[in-house]
Image (cartoon, rainbow, N blue to C red; front, top):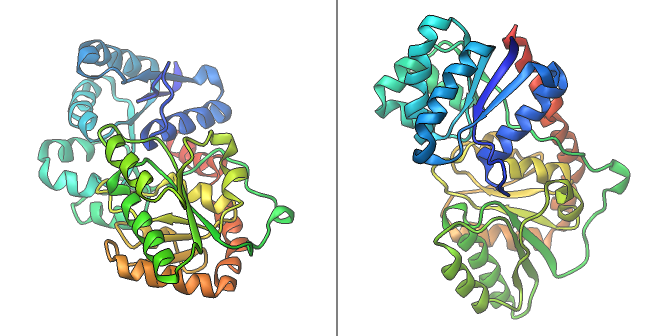
Length: 345
């Protein structure tokens, strides 16, 4: 009998850089380290509706073979998995755990009564922020635990930390490349500031997987601003700290409806890179004054004004770099999963 069975989107055979797949693989890898590889079994839910019947059959197998069953679906999968697992667990009596990816669950459950009832039967629901926990407790949940996002990542050594003083200052984004992640907000701010100053004072490098359906629009945006905005592709996970550490600021002007505790923030903190973020969703809980700066989401003028201020006062940015490194250590996958393992006993 395995200690844990994990049901989630692993994307075996594919190079996927979305938050769901990354978190599922990260949690699984660390559980195998802490529990032993032989004590962790997995089921990949990738394949969509075509493989649904086979996946559901395999879910029953996981229930029978593991003492603890951990599910990590996105919202479409949750609608199927939560009732299905709850029904068959009536006979198996295993501990069911739901590790939430993103920040959409409280609003989703307000509209999905059956899923809400099923999740109340689970041993634990593990959300990424305190604010999410409070929202679910208002819906009469008493099985919610805060388990922040985490990454298996090497934090930059303090001796390698450097103040960034070379101008023009280099900014970057590091997320899925899509409109709702604020890519166009970042582009607008840099374009506006450079035009106002009559010279290039900021450049912007964009990293991440381009969302399907956004490529044509994105290429047009790049062409219109090619002198100071570039697309740099997808950063390999093991290279993120090395690459991000050379930037002045990370821009995270998201208004993505499913935003929770974005993994990109951990990458930035690990690189000693302060963050300029929108106050959307749960960002204010993570991007505190110690490690970054907030502005009102979709308020482009506020973003522009803030970046002008930070250009003129670089000590405000460089003074936060050491705090970023300290913050990153709070989200090491080893420490976060060691807490989670206590709920598996």
